[in-house]
Structures are given as C-alpha cells and as structure tokens.
Image (cartoon, rainbow, N blue to C red; front, top):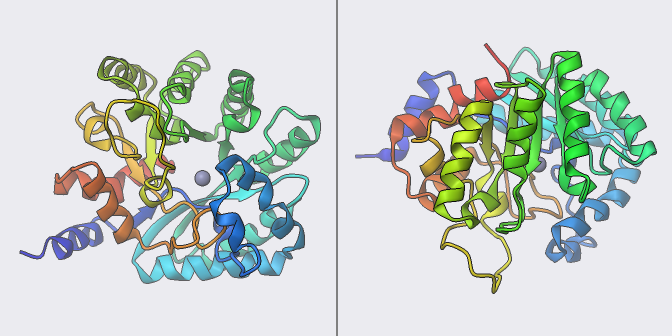
Length: 319
Ligand SMILES: [Zn+2]
C-alpha cells in the first residue's frame, strides 16, 4: 500500500494542488550575509526584510515569483494564492512583477494576489500604500499583529474594504502559539459584524491549540457561524520557539484534526520559501501535507485531498 501515491493520485484527479498561501515576492532571497537574521524573532523579521525589499528591482521580484511558479507547475498545481508586499519600502514593484507573472503564467494556473501589510494599515503612510494595493489585488490581506493594540480597527479597515470592493479577505492571525492570543476569535466576530460570512479566511491560527478545549469548541462554533475558513502552513509554524508557558499539550500547527470534524473549511499553503523567515523551506507541497497530517495525527485521506484541492479553491474564491 503506497499511501503517498494514493494521495497524490487523488489530488491529481481533483485537478491538482491548490497552494493557498505564499509570499513569492520574497522567495529565494536568503543570502550568506543575512543568514544571521534567520534566528531573529518574527516581529523583528517584519522589518529585517526592508533592506532586501528596497534593493529588489521589478525584474528581481518577477524572477523570484516565476521561479517559484515554475516549481509549483512542476508539482501539478492548479491554483496559487500569494501575498505581495505593498508598502513604502517595496512601493509598487511587487504589483508590477505580479502583473507580469499573471500575463506570463495566467494560462497555466489560476493566480490570486493578496496584499501584505507589513507596515500595518493605520499609520497614514502605510494606509496610502494599502489604498494603492487594494485596487490591484484580488483578495484583501491583513496582519493585525502589526497594529498590535488596535487589532479591531485594523480588521474594520480590511473588512470594510472587502465589503465595499466585493473582494475576499485573508488575515494572518494567532501566529505566536500563545494562550493570550485570540485573533481568530476577533476575526470571526468582526466577520459577522461586517456581514462578510463566507468571504473571510484566517491564515495560521497556531495559538488556537494553546487554549483549553472549552474555548476551542466555542471558537469552532463561532467560526462556523462566521463561515470563517482557515489556511494551515505547516512547516512555517512547527518550529515555534520553546516556551516555559503551561498550555494544553499540542503541536504548533493549525488544529485541523478538530476543525474538519467541526465542519470548517481548511486549506494548505507553503508560506515563505528560502528567505530569512524560512531558510530551509522549499515549497514542496507534499512535504507540507505530510507534516500537517503527522503533526495533527490526521489520517482521513479524502479530507486531506480536499484540504490540498477543492477547499483551497473555495478559500481563493475560485468556482
Ligand atoms: Zn504569510
């Protein structure tokens, strides 16, 4: 019984992989000189990429995105969602590269672009670039952790834009594996408040499993009500730093073993590739799925195939 082959054949029969989350404009940017940054804290990395972003040309960015896209095509990928940085450092360079990527590869696979807001959306300069980005992208992107203390306001801006422009919203939430984080819950509440049910996706949700079971069960019920979907990027988060904090024992991963039986839609993404965030990540979708099923002890093959295919289409807003 070759389980890998069985899963891969079923993924192929469903049209191929759907990679719902990436940052292709930063793929393959790791250099010898910035290798030292790979052990920095995540929030520091949000700024440490500035130098690389400033020096990258549109051609550089396009080449990185194209190289990664070729690799996804090699793996039999039918659709791809990728964030692109649009801020006062990257300016509109990633938008130009993304347009070229769509022009050259749009016939080979479906591509959805999402704006990354590494400078937040509240600072006036950051907001100006956000306003530029939302015109171009297919899906509105968010990172409430960047506007810490004002997360609700951050989400109001994203969801307001999504509703006004008829675009879906993808938001990085609960990334730090801490029971003090509850961004997925806030996102679900805000989704209902803005009437955006079925249009919103949480990315990561690692901290969910750091909460007790009663909290998690209530959260899943709330997420069902909000029709909030979830993306898991296994390799990007399994590496959380050791902590002395006592929490229910769990792996640092989106708890899909609970979410799928709870009736939630979950997809998979590769997140960062060979940059200071994830130096060893290479965008191999099988490795990501394998890690997800192992870390969640989740062996339902048909559901895993859905995670890798049809769920991803729903998450990217594809028919
Ligand atoms: Zn991301």
